[in-house]
Amino acid sequence: MTQEAMIRLGCFVAIFCLVSIVEAVAPRRALSVSKARRWFANLAMQAIDAVIPRLVFPLLPMGLAIFMADRGWGLLNVLHVAPGPAMVIGVLTLDLAIYLQHVLFHLTPLLWRLHKVHHTDRDIDVTTGLRFHPVEIVLSLIIKLAVVAAIGPPAAAVLIFEVLLNGASMFNHGNLRIPLSWDRIIRTVLVTPDMHRVHHSVIVRETNSNYGFSVSWWDYLFGTYRNQPEEGHERMRIGLKGYHDDRSSRLSSLLVMPFVK
Image 1 (tube, rainbow, N blue to C red):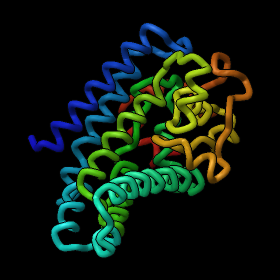
Image 2 (image 1 turned 90 degrees about the vertical axis):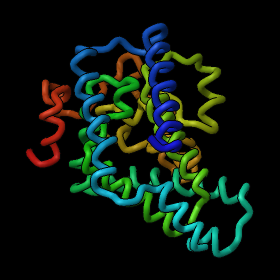
Image 3 (image 1 turned 90 degrees about the horizontal axis):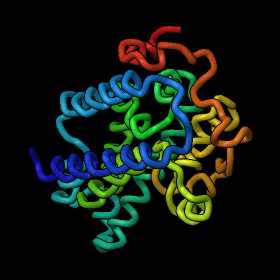
Image 4 (image 1 turned 120 degrees about the vertical axis):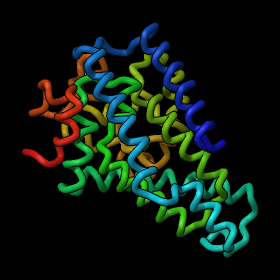
């Protein structure tokens, strides 16, 4: 196992365990579906998502960043941007790309068929942040590779971004009860569970808001921020209309969902 893989796996396990423990101790909402069944489907999806990119792509984003740096390719390398600013620019540019990708997957019908797999979860917790269709993961990876090729960020920036994205996704999908005073402070920089939960509402105008995964600034900047759900966090309905059935917690159904009506 490479050093990159060890770092990413270690951070994944640590954040997953921490969020899971806090969810059990201080949950924000009561769960409505069998946790064991949901977790099996969501974690199995994550396992598939972890394997497929390594089978499909000869080079992943961090490897491409090293390749670009060795040849002096990419905007940041051509301009000889100092390592510190290059790190910040690299992380923020990749995060902005994922925000824009998220908006695109909501607004484009064909891409929404893939992304709706994530939104059909009838509860929202740490495993929801891992529940993405493998084809969406492949397309997302293509976008990340394109951004890395264009700007040539430091390899360390790509690693930080990947760890931040994965960790933030588990955190902001967590069923966590965070004091409102803390939430207001945290969401000035990072997407909080209360902020992102709005995005998983069955109400379409709420679903089409709060697209950010890591930093919260993009939603403020582009006018997609919504402060709270209309029905409140305890009463709001999670998921998508028409999918409040067993399909939402069966792995086989999730894998074929984008391809059937």
